[in-house]
Picture 1 (cartoon, rainbow, N blue to C red):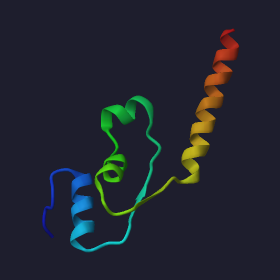
Picture 2 (spheres, rainbow, N blue to C red):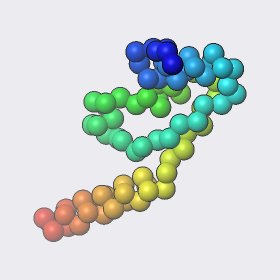
Picture 3 (cartoon, rainbow, N blue to C red):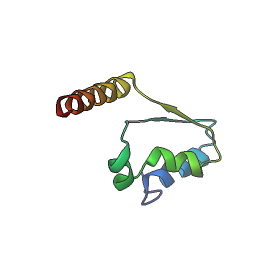
Length: 81
C-alpha cells in the first residue's frame, strides 16, 4: 500500500485515473449547512476535480432524518408562537 495524496479527494481521483476506472461511486452522508462548510465535502471535491464520471448515492435514511429534524423545528416554532 502506498500514499497517493495527503487529501482524500485527490487520492480517490488519482487512484481511479491510475486504474483506468470508468466510474467513481461515492456515498453522500447528508452533512449540510454549517457542518458542511466547516468540514468540507470530499464528494463535492471529487465531483468538481475528476474527469471520470462520479455516481453519488444518498441513503434513504439521510432524507428521513432530515425530515424528522425539520418537523421538530416546525413544532418548536409553533409552540413559541
